[in-house]
Image 1 (cartoon, rainbow, N blue to C red):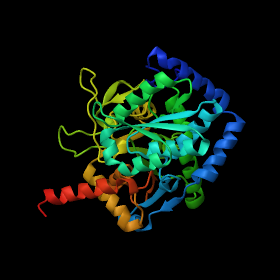
Image 2: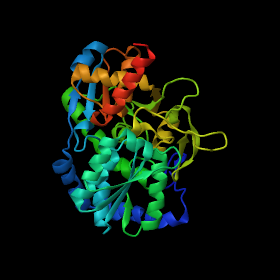
Image 3: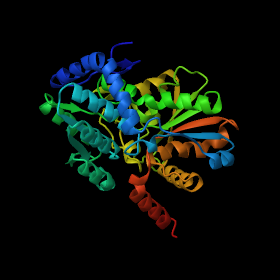
Image 4: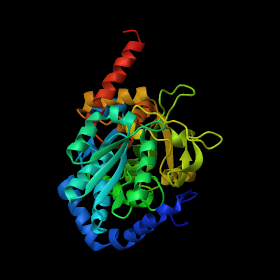
Length: 396
């Protein structure tokens, strides 16, 4: 495999000005991240600060209803409420060991911004977070959290004013301030070595889940399911199971309204290969290569690209990628709240929505392990507005 590639996907498609920090990061992965001292400190932070291992929870009521054995890997119980903290603590520790003083980030749903601000506060670093103006309005609660944690939140008012544009702005900032700043990329996207490094920080999810499932059930699950936007929670969950041919891997993207010609974020289902944010992967684009607007009711899935390793897993046939509409995700959100007493993030609700919609097509009694990537407190305003809109459209 070519350096920085997953099959035909990956690479470093960046301006020359970004090559010095990328080369520095490559060296740091070999000399710092793979060192015993980094490993010791990182594991201690995950255990004593993040709260790992997170729980494995069986959905007793839903399992009975669906005729399946449904389990959740509870990343919603990690500190700050989502899987994002695994990656930011790793990159934050690396930044400190590199002798740099500032963590730079972009965020869509706000969870990565909160997690980056949290890591910066814990490790004594400054923090700057770029966020699209649309997402700032959608995720005001998380903006307040970031600011309380000491981060400077920079609104991005160009383009679609969402995650894609926030990444563009953060990259420009990094070019200008790379000497003392580390760009804490939030998902398994971007130029090499980010997809590999972030996957390795998130792989703790699948390692724990595999061991926990074996201990509780005595074997491996039949199916592992996770939502996919950029794809960090999914790749973290899948990575440990990729070598296990008996475990089916299913990634669930956002289909928007599901109507013809609607905006959506089903990159792997409906996209085509191209280059975005420094990596070759599958994208939502026109025939001329112009990036199309994306949409999801879940801000963390609202991205027109995807991690290159997911593109390769799809191309090789090792993982299957499907999509779920906003309405299915909203229904799944309510179902999990009412049947299991768990408030899921709208991102995770897409994964659950696919299981609920397709339970009849899954072999009865199959064990399904789902990554619950985050909690839904951040989404309550979106959910309330969406449900009110549904009710109004039905004329109730």
